[in-house]
Amino acid sequence: MIERSIEEILELYRKEDPTDLYNAAWEVSSRYHGDNVYLRGLVEFTNKCVINCAYCGIRRDNKNVHRYSLDSQTIVDTCVDGYNKGLRTFVLQGGEDKDISVSDLCDTVRKIKKATNNEAAITLSFGSRTLAEYNMMKEAGADRYLLRFETSDPELHFKLRGISLEKRLKNLEDIREAGLQVGSGYMTGLPGETEETRINNALLCHKLNLDMVGIGPFIPSDETPLAGSPQEPIDYALKGTALLRLLLPKAHIPATTAAGSLKPTGREDMIKAGANVLMPNLTPVSVKKDYLLYPGKICLDETGTQCIGCMSMRVKSVGRKVDFSRADALRLKEAAV
Ligand code: SAH
Ligand code: SF4
Image (cartoon, rainbow, N blue to C red):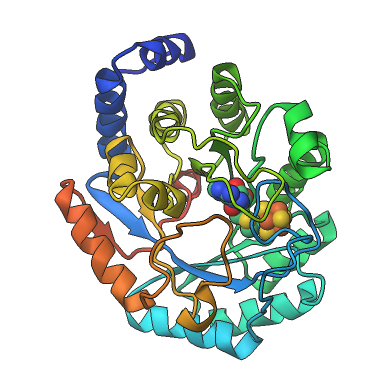
């Protein structure tokens, strides 16, 4: 078994031909996660947001968005439908919608837990919250939280989000303190980012010892201040995935929708570079087109069932198989032994 130091991993990453990097990441992914690609059902429950991230199509100041938020029963029904199709993990994602109180969302979490016989894992992802709120979510039965730091460059972070990187990192500490499994990540190809930023992004994920890491290419959106920015190549996200797999062998790393939107086989390429998770989109088709963080988003007309079928085929095509288990962070499994 090869154990590589950070220096050796970076040396592999910096080679001009990425073949060895991808092969090494595939091998490490196979060793830690077998042939499995885990499915997590995604429910985009609100596109209302009080934050104004410069990269995001549903930012506060974009007036051309039809705003929606799903009611609690619809969220529960959507998850139960996914549960009946075999899914055992659900990700509830949304903007920072101040119309939905954290306590209401916690009620929804309790209802989903009950309706799925406490078998399903629930991941939440709806922005920066207080420690008290993360504690409430854990108390209600939530298992995990996703909050990308977006970029590890403090100046760029502030420029794009109007909030400090330090605050975002404090949120991640709070999430861990609340006892939730911690997911973070970043975009690749943001204007102002350099190769050094991309390396630092991955090293920060390593330092944070994340349970889950989601990365994806930045896709410029017309209705934002970054409209007209260049579309950087998907390779940044693919090489980033491989680098993360080597730095964090145990982490769950999704092959993200943004990669599939930028290139038809983007998600398969991410799996080949070490990703081990896919997120079929269960959001009701009636509102899917309104959750447009970036243009060209795929699967807008497909139902969750169709997404699961399509993903199974894609996974097979690269020599892996889909797995419906809840797949908690490996560190929890080890702690339980
Ligand atoms: N509001 C929450 C979660 C929803 S946004 C939050 O911001 O944490 C989910 C992710 O979409 C963000 O973390 C960001 O990395 C990604 N995203 C936003 N705009 C994007 C774009 N134009 N291209 C690619 N990814 C984008
Ligand atoms: Fe809101 Fe998230 Fe979009 Fe930022 S990225 S504007 S927090 S939905």
